[in-house]
Image 1 (cartoon, helix red, strand yellow):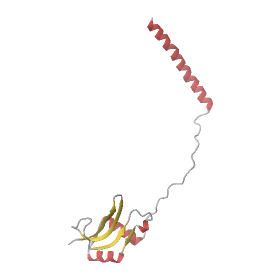
Image 2 (cartoon, helix red, strand yellow):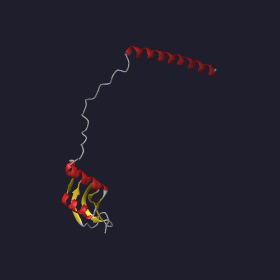
Image 3 (cartoon, one colour):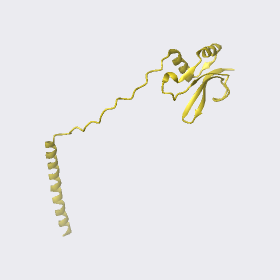
Image 4 (cartoon, helix red, strand yellow):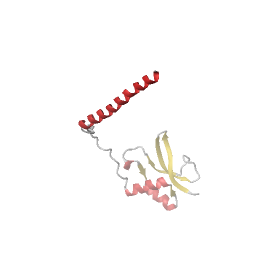
Length: 135
């Protein structure tokens, strides 16, 4: 019989909760466990309080030959080292910035006059064409 230390899922939809269990490898995920040695709650904000595990029982089962799953191996390593990583803080709130003027008003005014002058010339030509075509 191959024994594994793995997670058994409990909780409801979108609110997971896991027990760290010693189980037969052939047993279903939520099946009968040989022993429950801790629990893991990924929804707890404080990372150091997410995992509660009996390290003496883990050491016992590892010495007997139980193989931890990948996730359980990471959790056990973090509990032993006490290295939970640093939680990222949200960036500080900044007051809204006022829009910067894109160009000085003199340049904008001269650019607008040049564009409107071209449009006026095109507008004057268009009615002449219409009047010529209507005759």
